[in-house]
Length: 292
Image (tube, rainbow, N blue to C red; front, side):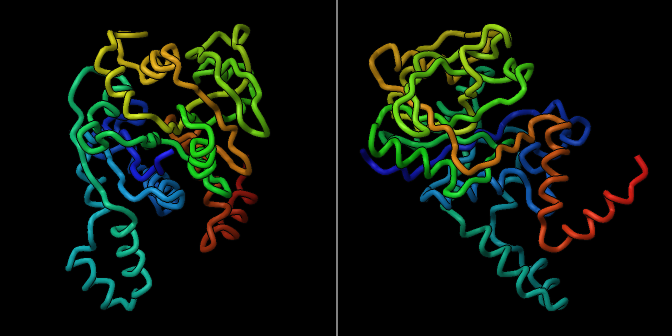
């Protein structure tokens, strides 16, 4: 199998769940203590061996490009005057994480459209897709675990996360699977946002994908799916029906953080604040002292 060198991060959504905060600021730039959500996603990709990061953006998303750009001369002078040389190094590190390519999204609504928009950058290589508003802490990184399976088995590989609460199954694409080995499963079908009583398992397949370049042809030929949208999972199912094997990797040693809605976002902020080396102990003491 050819190595995975490129990752696509769709980041063109309007973030309506976080209005009015996201009226002028991308939801992918919402802070988790002192880093935006999308930086966690990029760092996972880079730690897995990704060299080129393709971020598909839309209107009001310029802040993403600015964040991964080089430090401005004005900010650098300000930090130098304050003796904050370590912070300068951190800003330089962020800009040098990867080769960043930005593509403006065009086309019908749906999560398959930003993937198709990246075709000219991906060309004929297998590649990864990671959503810009959720991430997983894992050791080794989630995407690296998936890349190892892809290297051995090929096909399409999707990350899998067990959903503990049955009522939450309706929020995800749930897989009907056959066990292959260890944490690897062959996917027989994916049921998008099922009724919890009808879900084929509690393994949600979402968040990260390794896809062949043939996915672009499948996306181009798709008609509108559920809700009139272009769904990536529909294109994946087309390739699966034509014989492309489909695997799920249940992420080992990881914790899933969903920042796509207010409640899950706040849970993520609190949990990572408690683990933060600078503020963790003081923040924990603050929470203990709150009068609930």
